[in-house]
Amino acid sequence: SVNRWKRVVHINKQSELKNQISIRMPNIKIFSGSSHCDLAQKIANRLGINLGKVVSRKFSNQETCVEIGESVRGEDVYIVQSGCGSINDNLMEMLIMIHACKIASASRVTALIPLFPYARQDKKDKSRAPISAKLVANMLSIAGADHIITMDLHASQIQGFFDIPVDNLYAEPAVLKWIKENILEWKNSVIVSPDAGGAKRVTSIADRLNVEFALIHKERKKANEVDRMVLVGDVTDRVAILVDDMADTCGTICHAAEKLLLAGATKVYAILTHGIFSGPALSRINNAAFEAVVVTNTTPQDKHMQQAGRIKTIDISPILAEAIRRTHNGESVSYLFSNVPL
Image (cartoon, rainbow, N blue to C red; front, side, top):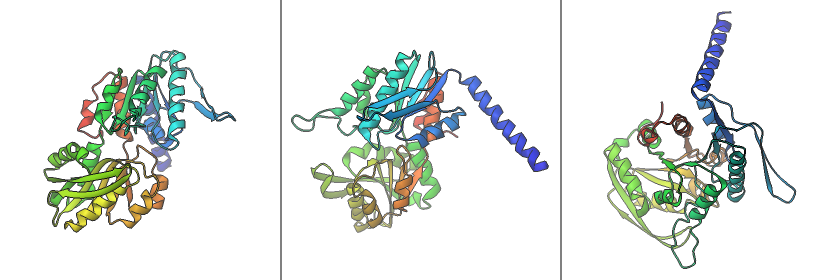
């Protein structure tokens, strides 16, 4: 009977907390697209509110149909959709959801896009190449998005493609926390960037940990294929921690791991914000000499973890949930750039 009483008290406390949060956070609705329902549910649980009712289906001719199942008039709406899986279908679904909420008189529509689609097509690197990230930005604005929340954009200049506010959150505080809690020899480590483009990200982490950094210069012959690699920096008898914003086919990080071990590193870890893992990625990870490949859950990782035991995940739903809470309440989000919410 004592246990039963404790259980009742616990349930009462939980419902009280939910009531308190919903009193503090009126007029908020969170809807999930079909790309990453698990993350959206974690965000809603963290905020103590229920996900909004939405049904997404396809007509027989493959057109997307979205039905918002509850009133959004005058509400602050957040739509969670990541750029993974069937990217084009998911992007179209998100645009239709934004549009549906906007014309149903939502007071503000925020697109929460943990992994921004087409982020790598951000510049005209050869003749007649499209700048697809700019096109996606235009589409989101035209659909009716008032605000964008995303994480670790491939190039932070993408924020400038929009004329609406963009909050580009960083996984760095969660990464630092993971390193300190899971790598015993982190004080004797070197943070390594697998390409020159990620040097800024790596130096920031190395400064926060007060350790050295190195970078690998790579020459690409064509997209997704790396030709030659040169290590700049010393990793002899140290733990090498590769840090990058995303891993797709994993050719770069697997070559980099070989290079680091040949250069005298004792162990190699890879920490990546977005684990896309397409094509031969998982078999490459299984055959490489990593201690662990750590990714965040900006994209679903359950299947990847089953196929490659070295993959570990960092849950970033507390960061995204706190960003939603702060945005909704009109508070500053910059605290999240250097701190993990408790």
